[in-house]
Length: 268
Length: 300
Image 1: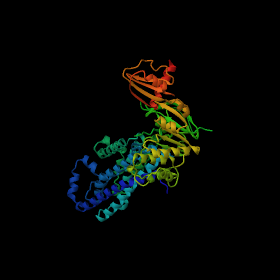
Image 2: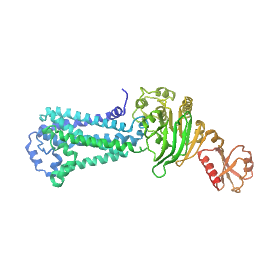
Image 3: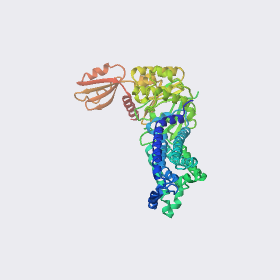
Image 4: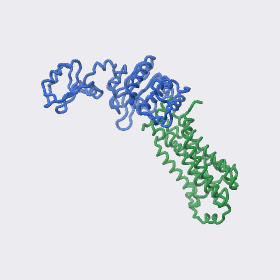
């Protein structure tokens, strides 16, 4: 098979992808090992229930703070804590590097001197981002299914899949945002900084929403709301939430080629 | 027959000083067209406009009779580009990189790359990051030629090449032209362009100074003579010597342009006490000096 921008980009990412996988494996194994000692531990539950509301917003996943249950444990530890951090970091890094990274390293000039349509180049980079995040999601899901069964967490594979899909879409939304900012400006650091800042802001907005009535209606603009509010770990797939996340990804992804097609490329 | 490159009123503003203004020129099929100018004159900008990497502020630009903006993919499929500032994928080997380039050009394997690499004695298996500047430049040349393009856009192609490789490069250019293909060659070295090109355009601060056949240019070539005197000679000391023009005077140092026989100048110099004498073939800077002289002379 002849190489394409997509296959070349995937090959280039293979090295870092393995490290992300090792990181996920280590974390999931660690969480699986700790769970049995927390299982059914009521004093920990009571401790968390005594936390201030503001803090609960950050640690709870879809309002479930029952850390002694499998769903509550995975929700607070994995899906509201390091899951978003790892997946958003990976997606933003790949997205920012897609166009802006190549442009800053100076390789984009030669790439686009070849008979490759600019928009197509960008779409293949976007496809590579999707492949990488989905692959990370599959790795996470498989590991969680194994650990959930082994440690007796009792969370179904279907619910884990639903939550992982939501996490993938959340990461893709900010990854494609980083790609779009990078494609619009050619600046990698700006793309990383701005999309990471927006991600943190969106998370804080969603977490603090229950505290103030004026925030409560603002939470609807936060992608994190659609990611977690219905607690897919307990309730499974929620089609409308996933559709909102998917729509957000598509909107951001469609902006990227429009801005990229119009501008001058810079040289390092 | 349509021109290979056709520019009319081509203008690109950006930044404060960089860019090009009102460039109009034509490059015919089968010629080596030298694009000569000092660094920062707008040579790279012009080439990047041709490849649709940047977009013109105004004016028209066609390659192969195709609009470089509307038909950029078709244009780029028939052109080969060597950037002046070459950035390659450091982790790949030349073979991996050239295979990628060939694939994006719709070719299997390396296209002509294998034969070219052999000719340039380019080692294909070591990672690019481990290559010397000269070897990187070879990778750049091979990727520009591997699809046998109708038009080569070469930005300072000989920088970093050792003399032996330059000879191979010169031969390659001659073959390309013999096959009726076209070369657009930018350089800041007058002698290089004189050696390789049929016609030359001189660009300075974003504007074309002249477009001329190299033979005509060569006829205007001169030797630059720089003499240092113990005391400055009178202003008109070299005024009426045949083939001699005074270019510059800095205290006791006088810079002269000499065309033709040296004897009258030598005899005149001998009347004064000369502390140092230096002469060499005029370079681009000297050439510009004479252009200004002519410009101001015709203006007054």
